[in-house]
Image (cartoon, rainbow, N blue to C red; front, side, top):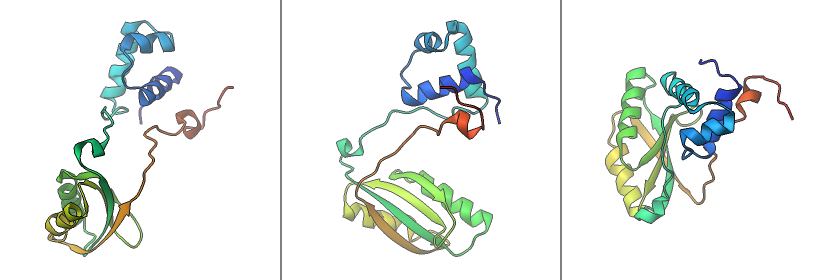
Length: 163
């Protein structure tokens, strides 16, 4: 795990809330010279603290008005079977996330599709036919709220928070 100081944590928080900040703006907010800020950001990328950056998109603007969760049971819980299935699922264009879970099902696949016909065809053509799949239960997502920001990093690491 990368050692993060107060400035690193502040940079992470700032970029999680607005990834469009320029290096100059970030440097001013944390009280560093732009060159020092740039080096810190490079270190955060190089050490894997930052794993990617993206623009949040409204799928409905592209005709993708339905989201669903596919709860999938697998016959075998062997690493090769699970890894092969997870890799296959993650490569399907309609898939937004794949989770290996505990409980009644083994995998949850979050998909974004046009409509119920698209969802049915996706399940039948891309998941039912996969080696090891024993059952699929589908739940339609009526509404979703997400928090793409990490919990308070200092509190998670057990640091004292100042008022």
